[in-house]
Image (cartoon, rainbow, N blue to C red):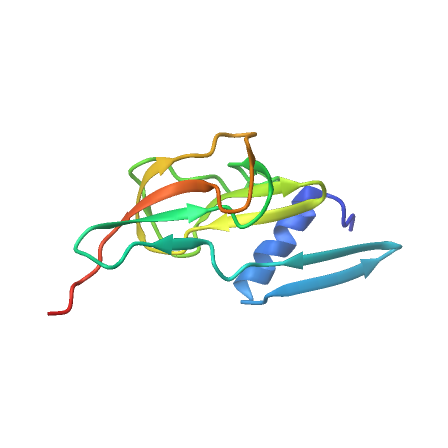
Amino acid sequence: MDLKDPAVICRLAEALRQAQGRSLSLELGGQSLRIALSDTVATAAAPTKASHATIASTGFGTYRATSPDGLLTPPEIGETLKVGQWLGCLVAGDLILPIRAAETGTLTEMQAAEGQLVEFSDPLFSIATSHEIDG
């Protein structure tokens, strides 16, 4: 296994997310790799009947819509998203940071373009969400 292969890194990050882990460190054949997943990928407005959530970058890197292995592809505008759904990834050298939906809702806007350099907290996506109001 080549720990510098983006496809391997993406698969390991996906396995870590599915296992609900926070970080992973590996050493293999003189190579080492550390993957850390962020808890917060989105912030939302106060709950209303219809509100919008913005998914912001949790790091610095180049936005890629499709996973390095080509197995995960981004949703289209108007598509209903589920929590944890693949939205793309940030690539910074050998590090790949998956971007996932933090809320259920409808994708209304893609603010990051393929190959665009993004910085921490740059808005990447907008989601229309529905919340019930207590009252």
